[in-house]
Image (cartoon, rainbow, N blue to C red; front, top):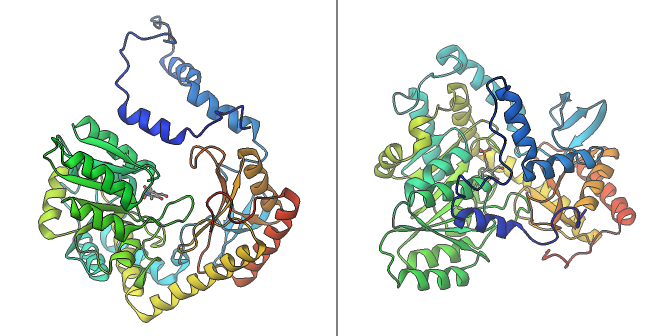
Length: 457
Ligand SMILES: Cc1ncc(COP(=O)(O)O)c(C=O)c1O
């Protein structure tokens, strides 16, 4: 596969290109669609044009070539409370859910949603710029209380938070530093900020020394605006956590602020699940944390931590807040119910259960000598490398009754494919042990890389 796709690490280059490349002139139309005649079918013209795009062709070719093993776009026919699923008649243990605490199956969360439907209906049909239901204010305050911050502002998803907030934080003349490995939605937000005149710099590697070097060079120069540094709290494909305390120190030294997209750390990492930034810094004072309500929360949406004053500023500066719709009220009721659990001894117990499942799996993977990436969040990735081998390994586990996500380029750098395992608190111990047995056999069958290679732990 390596030489049928590109042969080098394109992730960085692709991102750098798309951030810095000047717009193509419209008359540069080497592959332009012929001007349609009056009788032409516009939908067919559009379809043909999209089909001719080289990135699309590559993606479609990939899906066709590996149709038997890529395991994408699956349909789950059935599921139960312990993460057993049925796909195409096969019964499997599902290690591909980011509902990490199993709260999607919790009767209290389900009841909160159903009761809210009776009270508020299924949807508040207006942008929040016009009106929000009182339940939204309550959910924002409840989140703030759980996290120990002054306030929060809810968005319909982390993607919409990043795309709306990042351009709101860094505009004309400001500096925005983006970790090269941060989530696609952070990169998309950066592109909009760049279009608005912000200076965008890529951080690679994501460490304090590199950041210091970058900021020393830039902020002693002509730049007079603000400085925002955007990173992930937990990398979504590897489960690794960047050095947030050191990064925060470096940003503060240069008068900037750290923005942490902690989608995967929310409700599972750190004390009471307050996330990777809270774990690293002891509080969320002086940083902006974006959390997910769609993963461990098992609801829908996202939030950013803020002061009351910043909240008012975000409301008038974030385009996705102003021009988009809100999180439906039943989910807001569920968010309050989840916060009540997280902020209680029962929540501590639930997170402990999750951590003991994570430890059982990571200890087992280590003892097999397999190359384990992150081990402090519920995302446990095993490095495989080659794209084709990663897909085949995922299919081999599927056939043994275990669904894990085989993640390949462009979700990870080329030839840095991983088996991405997501551990949930409601996985039974037998499922974890069964997966470990399957991994042991997989290792023999596939001659997988060993621990210590590929930057693994
Ligand atoms: C770090 C990170 N940010 C953002 C997102 C997107 O979140 P959402 O589905 O809420 O848009 C994800 C999704 O997995 C993620 O891992």
